[in-house]
Length: 292
Image (cartoon, rainbow, N blue to C red; front, side, top):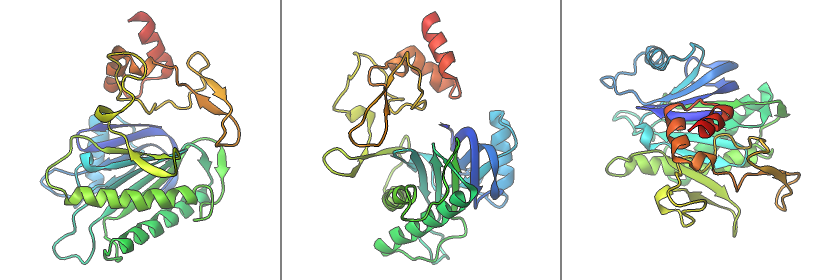
């Protein structure tokens, strides 16, 4: 899965098997998932047409699942919890609504999920959203613009996704934390210049850490002048043994991919190229480095 921002649209690209409560909704295979904040005169009466324009503008195929965000994409919260990545956005409540405003969520798994697990994950994420609202003293009625997409890639590993399963035990805390952070961004004054990125850390106890490149205490971890936009590598785990190796882990069963010595995406020319060509392959980037 790759994701990148184009204006007020977050674009996820991959080979997804997904379940969607948004636009157009349903269960199926799609190459594209979109989260879009409409700025077209504030009109979201026909979101399908808005998404069609986004796909046409970006030159993407017509098959997609999409959600409408009630707040600018720069207020989005992105959360990494092991093999799961969540994208959570909140919006301001309407004047005549007895709700806390819309909450949209995309859950992506690097490990494959059965169709039943995809559907069950929607229920798990929705229950966690309601739990988060209750903890904050917010209305539990929901909003007509609420939406959830759950997507996975790869061979099926997970056939269930209830709250006590391997996936459910990650979705619930991520949604509880992410909804709170997303709502806080709706209420704050001013605008942010980019989405917020959080990592679930087990170092010195389990907790969420917001990664802010400019405040990284380890900079420079590779070399002076390195670039850090892709510190959390979109190719991980790439399995390319010229860039890393499989290693034993004391905290997980089985080997983990160790690429601590890889500097490819920290090279300024490579970082610039990947920003301009977000779907570039690893082979393409390695070739770019060798040719300059």
